[in-house]
Image (tube, rainbow, N blue to C red; front, side, top):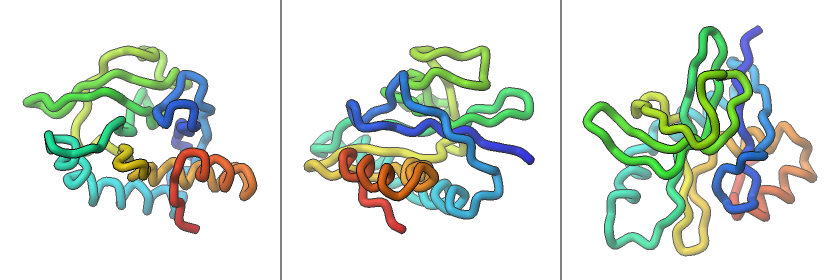
Length: 156
């Protein structure tokens, strides 16, 4: 059985936190795979919003797939910038499995490694599709409370 490890972005700053818990999710989880597919389908719109100098959007971040051997971990990166070879940004989680990285390290990644994204615009939280799935694994009451405090509209 292969597990993916996702960091839950709790609402302290609506950005990833050093203390975010790691939640294991099986690689065949239908909801998580759908959330990742949706985020990847919509990533061009996210990147367009980010590059629009007239937008009121802020707090742009991406959740990136990082592989170490056979282990896969998904971690938040913010801020990040576009490079010729893809992207580069600052890791905002303490890795649980990937031992060659630490909170605050600069990481390079490609568009294909982006598994989720998020930003805030006009007080509304966009993205966080994988976060909603992770929240759903933590119990209905907890999930509802955290989603509300983060301003997420997680679909059932």
